[in-house]
Image (cartoon, rainbow, N blue to C red; front, side, top):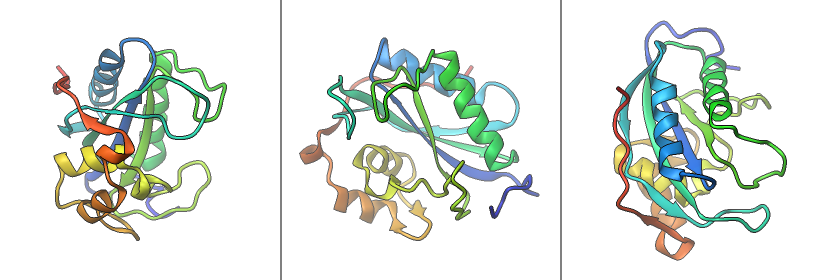
Length: 177
């Protein structure tokens, strides 16, 4: 995997946050706090919150989604481990593929690293098609691009939003304490 070693300089990491069980907004806020609280991931920005229809899986409640931008010198795999720890802290259960969950944290991109490692494919293999990732990402970083796929703005326009059940909601996430 390119970029597996600790980078020499901080890199930009994009993390997608989702929750459709329990207090969804509190679950997203807990993710921001857990991911950027301890040393290693520096908070850059967090997007507005979107409510989205589930994609795939069994029938389930709608999700709240957001995108977190962070800066890190941690290796990509350590960022994934941090994401899994945040999910575990919110009692994420991995029972049914694409099933309901208290918290889902996906590493969408790690700088411009491209990797087909099955443990951490970068960029995320479906991010360029998912309005629930692209819309909030575009809000927080309108000049972003997905390695190998193009500009987030163009991808978001192609993916649609309102037609796909993706709409901004009033809830806001705050930077970590």
